[in-house]
Length: 119
Image (tube, rainbow, N blue to C red; front, side, top):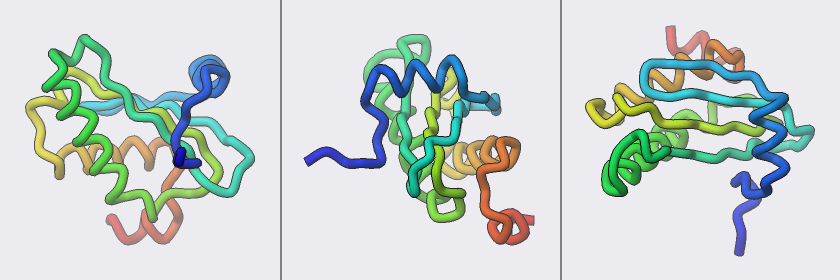
């Protein structure tokens, strides 16, 4: 059974790349756009520029775990693409999480209570 909170359709990716806003951070790029739904949909990507398949899979695992940790602090109703950068391979999960939180904060995707708690 397919999960409803994962982006899959080509049209959704096309809309995000062309109409969405982007935020760059040290180890990732965040592309986001409102989707009009009551939940967030996400996609996690690592291109061949990141490295071989082992390195790309590690980059995706780091992004997936970091997203899982901050998922409850995000506003609802957005499509989100997280793209790994090459220097993610040298970082630990806590560093990736901190970088992702900074990107979400720049994009104004964090709930107000979460922003106050992080300070």
